[in-house]
Each structure stands twice: as C-alpha cells, then as structure tokens.
Image (cartoon, rainbow, N blue to C red; front, side, top):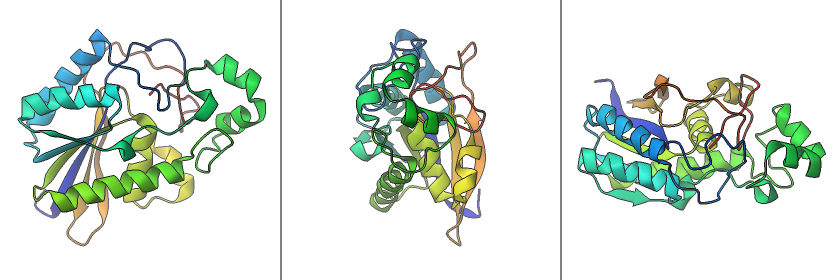
Amino acid sequence: MRDHDRTLLMVRHGRTVWHGQDRFTGQLDVPLSRDGVMDAQRAAEVLSAFRPDFLISSDLSRARQTADVIGQRCQLRTALDERLQEEHLGAWAGLSHDEVSQRFPDEYGRWRRGDVLEAGTEREGLRTVALRGETAVNEAMTSNNGRVGVVVTHLNTAIATMARLLRLESEDWLAMGDLALGSFSVISRCRDGRWILIAHNVLLHTNTTVERGHGSRLSSGKSRSH
C-alpha cells in the first residue's frame, strides 16, 4: 500500500447477548456474548498482522469490549468516541420487527423499501450517521501520526461512514452490502486524498446466523443485527 498514506480497518463488534432475538438494538447498551468475545479474539489475531498504530471505538459496550480485546493483542489503548455509536432508532430500540411493523407501519414500510438515508420519525438516518462517523475518523487521524488505524463500530455506522469516505453516490450506499458480526473492511486513502475500498466484509468466524436486522435495510433486501 505504498501509494496510500492512511489505512482504516473498519470492524463491526462481535455477537451480543441479543444475538438471534430479531430485535432492533440501536444505541441500547447490549454487551457481547461469550461467542462475541471469541469473535473479538479472532479479529484481534488477524488485525494484529496489519500492525495498527491507533484504535478508536464506539463507547457502547459491545464495541468497547471488542476494541479492548483488539487493543490487548495489538498493544494499543482504545480511544472511545460516542460519535461512532450505532444509528439512533428512538422507540424502535428493543422492539422486535413484528412489534415495530405493528406500532410504526408507515415508517417501517419505508425502511423495508430501503428508504434509510434520510431521518424518519424514530430513525436518525444514515446521512447524519455518516457525518458524525466521518468527523470522528478524521479527528482520530489528525491526532495520530500512524498510518494504520482500527475503528470498532456498528453495522450502520460502518457502512455509512465508509460510503461517505468513498464518496459514493446516494443510490450506491446500500450497495455496500452487509458487514457481518465480528468482521471487518479495509479502506485506504490515496496520496491525492481519494479513499478506495481494499477489502470488504472479511469474515472471521463460521456458523454466523444472518438475521433480519436492528437498523438499516441493506442491498440484499435483508437487514442484519447490530
């Protein structure tokens, strides 16, 4: 990556104690499960090969716990940033898909159709998420001289932040697709300032259940838990 001056490893946290429950999580503080800790350990082993120079994370427990495991393996201290939290989902948080579809049928219908970039009555919207994610990442790069950084965050925040950094057109944001629990993507900044996608959704564990999700609907027509 000699033509790149910065590389970010965008990591989604491991599995949580809500895994398999088909609930919207949003910014509720749900911790990792035992499987999620193992997800983090596997991620740490792979990420250590990149020799990262700095580590930032959402301050929600599931991301913070993942980052702590990575930090121990890579000998890095975790800088927490609330701007890397998951999309705010308002009254949807903690509810199942069936409950949300019954209580908020119009907005749930828009979400199912892929209308996720703009804010809704309950949802923050991915454009706003992307702005705060990009700001957090840029400030971290300014504060750290190293070339390689690890960013531990959540599904919608990771996808939205990468889409904004890559300067994708609005209609292409959802084409980023999924970022599985405990997996990561690699984006690098060229010396002319352009960001490029090096690898996406690198899977680190097997037998991961793909669920309907707790946030934004992605390109496949199915959404995944946060």
